[in-house]
Image 1: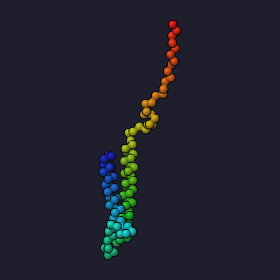
Image 2: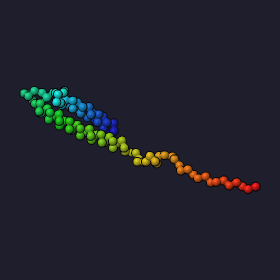
Image 3: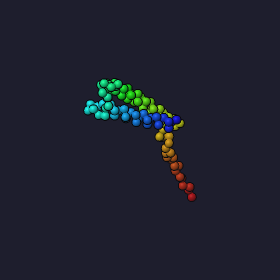
Image 4: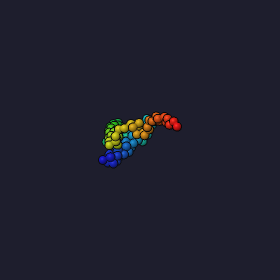
Length: 100
């Protein structure tokens, strides 16, 4: 289960990086909006990439939380102090010499 979820998580992460790089930045960046006469205008591409980014980000967050919950299952909650083996010093009884 964790392996399948981890593979999905990695695929979402790679897709998220790709979608973010395709978006047009202020300087133009790697944005490929298409021409205005084509089927998808620059504004339509921006809307599509924004929606894709939000869906991928939500999926990334969901898989991250699920993986964290699955990783924590089966562990007992314990304190660091419970794991130490420090014992309190035992007071020694004074030895009384036996009189001759």
